[in-house]
Image 1: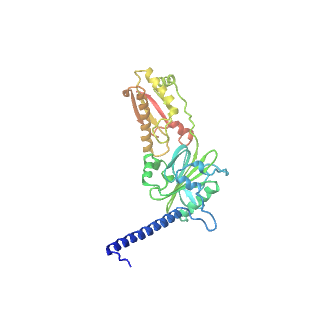
Image 2: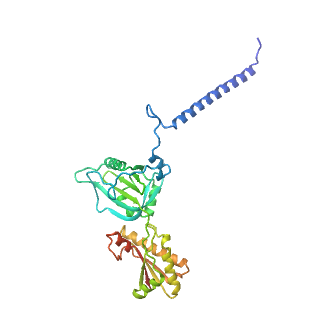
Length: 346
């Protein structure tokens, strides 16, 4: 029998222990990796395959309306959907022939331009309000029309601040509902010729919803040439132009640049002419907000003219909101006439 020095035996035992521990750790890592990989795959239904991702779920991960199913279900008259039995709109619902509204798609807003309907609602007399009943009914109705739910849950606080910045909380407060404290739902009925969006938010005593039908903007304003503007100023001391702005903003749309160019030509041809540029709105929304918006729009026109070389002292901007209508605000035609810019000789 060969004697092994005690020091060498200790070294050999230490090496063996390290090898055993390393092997065990390696095996445990492989087991954990397999468990992790298995957990990342959706569980299959008994006797079947894993359920595929629905179009609505895909929308929340990077919204693409083109991935939604196209509906050809028959529709009635706008706004196409009605409240469940036992529920009714509060006050006077708002319908705008052309405006924009932000619909939450799960990660961001989708700004939809077109015809907008907004209303707050509550339970009828002698009936208790049920959030679940309203939600289930709206979802079933949308589904029957070929639509899908694309988002459900609380809108993040940072995103809610955008509503305030754009004035949505004022213009559509009833339809928006209390999104600051309660979750909301977004639905889309995707059709071949247009899309219908639905925002729904309810709480324990009431709720609100907004329905929008996409519609491309149609420019209807007629460009008045500088000579005609001059004639109006000579005859009445003022001239009215219709400048198209981005919805709820003071951004002049490209199709109105020809009209701005004619005003610029008028001022360039009359160096002594000084003008007040007055902004006006229709009666949709909050009066104070409309006045502020009309002031900003009038200033945008002045800024465009000074950028064209007109001295700032020749121009003065003022906003009057809905205070001076020239047509009936109960019709879309009247509202369109009231949304105007007036040039007043100073």
